[in-house]
Amino acid sequence: MRKQTSTNALNEKRIIDTCGMAVALRVIGGRWKPAILCRLANGTMRYSELRKSIEGISERMLVAQLRELEQEGIVRRVVYAEVPPRVEYEITELGHTMTPMLNAMSDWGRQRSRLAQQ
Amino acid sequence: MRKQTSTNALNEKRIIDTCGMAVALRVIGGRWKPAILCRLANGTMRYSELRKSIEGISERMLVAQLRELEQEGIVRRVVYAEVPPRVEYEITELGHTMTPMLNAMSDWGRQRSRLAQQ
DNA sequence: CTCATTTCTTACTATTTTGTTAGTATCTAA
DNA sequence: TTAGATACTAACAAAATAGTAAGAAATGAG
Image (cartoon, each protein chain N blue to C red):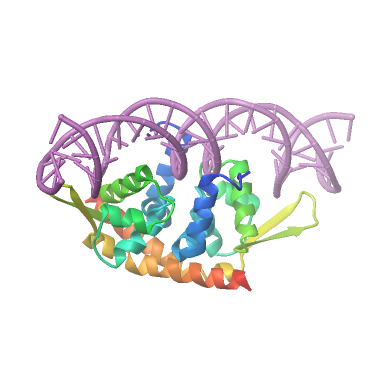
């Protein structure tokens, strides 16, 4: 939980109020969010599919990051009343508006990695 | 200092090895980096100018973030042998290759802020 | 009734990031 | 000689993020 009155939190708020980049970083920052967004970009996936496809992620972190993305309106959680339960995750319309940004980041990152290898 | 063998560090490394977005986030993530990059995008600035123009930043954080950007090759530190000292910071050529990405982030973030206001 | 499956929770610990405070070095001008 | 300007550094504390381990609910199959 964040402590609303810490200098840290206040500084973050101030930056987010004045800088679009910081807003974007706030939404997609977090250890596993890039991985999740990559997976979901190709279409809907179940919770267990995500877990299996993201090597090393714990259930706690997967849920936490999905919840944050959901709160931000980037991802939609769809529950099917079945047993055993089935929950699917998909990118929302707002989420899709991130595509140019995500592509730009992905391109730059890959290019940089290539350079770093040489 | 990072502990190279923590699960945390290993997970991050794995993600960075496989995901361009994560690479980009690693480079521009950090509380004050967006603010610094915005300022320097308009041209060279002295250390003290940066400090004054970024409300709330401490000297420790400003130096730390500048050092990281320098290490990543995004920013160049230029020292003039004067008294009192003069140190200027500027975006490198590699740094400029981030422009499309930074613009995409900035655009998306601003648009989102506008939507959030309404 | 017991087990298996899926999708999570909860409580706790470890790690990392950020912030605070008090310095340091150098030379110049008063 | 003393203060002032600039660009830092170091030691420590607080806050935030990430990881670990165990368990919970729901229900159909056997």
